Image (tube, rainbow, N blue to C red; front, side, top):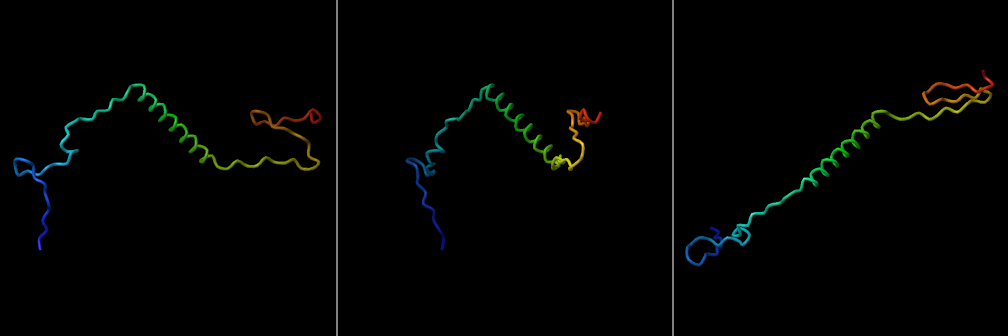
Length: 91
C-alpha cells in the first residue's frame, strides 16, 4: 500500500499552496542601541568579577576558629598587621 499526501493546489498551476508564514516576505530586523550593549558589557564584567571572587574564596579553604586564651595565660591581642601586642602589665 502506498500513502498519498493530500496537497492543496493553487488556483492556476499545479504547484502546492504554501502556508501563510512562508508566503510573507517581510524581513525582521532588530536594532540594538549602543547603550544596551554597554550595559550588557558592564553586566558581563560584574558577573566575571563575582565568579572570580567565588573561586578565590573556595581556594582559600576554611578559616580556622579563633583560639581561646587558656586559664592563667597572659592576655595578648593581635594587631591589624597580625603582630602580637602585649598588654601594659607584660612590658
